[in-house]
Structures are given as structure tokens and as C-alpha cells.
Length: 410
Image (cartoon, rainbow, N blue to C red):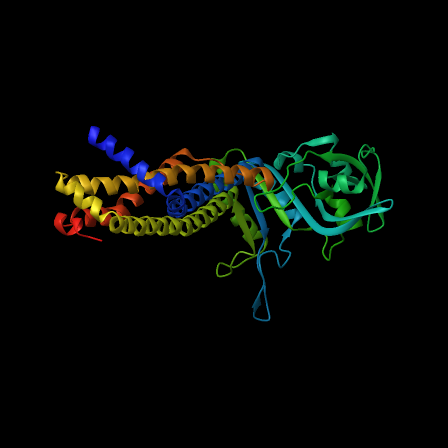
């Protein structure tokens, strides 16, 4: 045990002789470990953010969007044709069991005008169920009611971003009037802020109208009753598979689709979306970690090169130690411990750098990060493995030197 301590002190003393060289040698390890820790923190933060965003919409909610269409041999994307209607949404609510709530909507990007100010934003025409199914409360005022919907009332609810860009700070918003396509609309509420989505989109940059108002007086439509999206809430998340099957059967019958024809709609569940986004985050994280791991390998090669140079520089010292009784294992351990010490110091500095970068990204850019202690421990252990692997060859070379030849080395 005393031999190991003496060897460690000796290794530290040797590293202190040339701190610049030792620091540059450890740089690859520091960069590699720091990058791995930062990438894992960003990846886990993104995954948690996705899960939180999906949970805010509800794990028992499914989305129905219009299907693709083919015109002249050219296949359009999802939603390229209006195949869903208000009647479809109402039938789903009435005829499909385990459905607790249905919301439908249409949207467009338009200019909203307030006196001498204007703001281009999303105009969403939807139903009174919006706050409940989207878990989106009203911060000021009220949401529109079914009576407003039936009467196609000229009312509007603003998202926080839209309100901030149309009104001055301290100005009374609720009760004021805005215009969309020269249609005057009375502001009856402001939605609570939700901030940015995982994709970086500002979720608060929109305004909400009753669907009937949007369809008949503001947005217009080629065919009355067509919708761009339907959201369906079930009693529990376990009811979703059965509800999906029932909705498919109902819509195919209503749209008179033959058995050989594809669905002209697409149903997506929150779980599917969450798994897709989480999978994408994991793939990106693994790719970035693979790139970061290259720095660890480069750092390991740097350590091996420096130790080989050190073996050459200290050949006479090695010969002298062997001459006074040092065994091969002692020489091997001396150089191996030097490699382990360099990677350990580099690993500690790298972990600190990775945590610092993660916290800095969260503070400056707002990216969500979660410091994973298992990932930190794994990165640190990996740095030790790199040190042992790349330090073994020069250590073994030093231990095999012939004492007589080593003493005569110039």
C-alpha cells in the first residue's frame, strides 16, 4: 500500500514539472467528458420537456387530422384536403363510447389590428371545450360560451404574446376592440402563458375565436362545416386503443370509403407523439455523444504519446531504478498510475465543464437541461478506462527495458 502512495506522489511530482504539457495532454479528455455530460444533460432535459408538454395536453387525448390526397398523380401531405367536418366531430362525441369531450378547430395566419398597431399571428377558430381539452386556463376575463358559439359572436381571446404586441403595458385589454379582416372583435379574455414548445415555437402567439365566427365572418371557407383538426378526450388513457378503432370505423362509414381505399384521415395519440419526439431526442443525443466520444479517444492517444515521450526521456531513471532492485511491476505501475492520474484530473475538470455548460445554456438560451448523475459517473469511469487502456502500452514498454541498456542510454 505504501508503494502505491509513493508512486502516486511521484507521479504528481513528475506532472508538476511540466504543467503546460500535462494540461494540453488532458485537454482531449476534458473536452470529451464535458461534451458527453453536456449532451446527456441536454438530451434528458429535452425528453423531460417533451413529456411535460405532452402531459399538459393530456395522455388521454387523441388528434384527428385530414388525410393526404392525390391529384394528377401527385400525392399531397397530410391535411392537404378537407376531409373532416363538424358533423364528424359531433358524431364521434355522440356515438363513440368512452369519449368525454370533443373539440374541433380551423386556423389561419392573419393580421390582427389594434388602433395604430398590428400583429401577424395565428387565428384559431374553435369550440368552448378548448380550455378544458388543452388544459389551458384563462388568466384574465373569460372564455367564450356555447351561446357565443351559437350566435357567432364577435368576440376574441388573446394569447399572451399577441396581447403584449397589440397593447401597451398597463393598458386595459379585456373589453377593448381589435380588428381582423376589418371585422371588429371584442376582447373578452387573455389565456395563461405556456411559453415555448419543445420545437421552439411560441405557444402564446395566437388568438382564439368561436368556430362559427371564424368560419362565417373572419376566415371564410369553401365548404361550410369543414375543420382542420379534431381533438378527442377519453375517460382514461387505457380507453384510447378501443376509441381509435371505433373512430376509424365510424369515419370510414361516414366518408363512404371502400375496404380497398386508404383512410382519408389520420389519428395520432399523445403517446405516439411523445414516443416519436423522445426517440428523436435519444437519436440526436446518441449521435452527439458518439461525436463527443471521439475527443476522449483523441485524448487517450495524446496521453499515450506523452507517456511514450516520457519513457524515452526517463530511460536512464528507469534503468537506475531497476539496478537498485525495482521490479518490472513497479515500473509498469508507475507509468500506468501517471496515466490514470491525468485522466482522473481531466475527468473531474471535464465533468465540471459539462455541468457548467449545461447550466449556462439553460440560463442564456433557455434550453432545458437535467444533470444526470449516472451519466456523470459513467463518463468519469469511461475516462479512467481510457487512461488505463492507452497508458498500458507505454507502461509495458517501460517495464520491459533492459537495465544495462537503459543506464547507457543518452
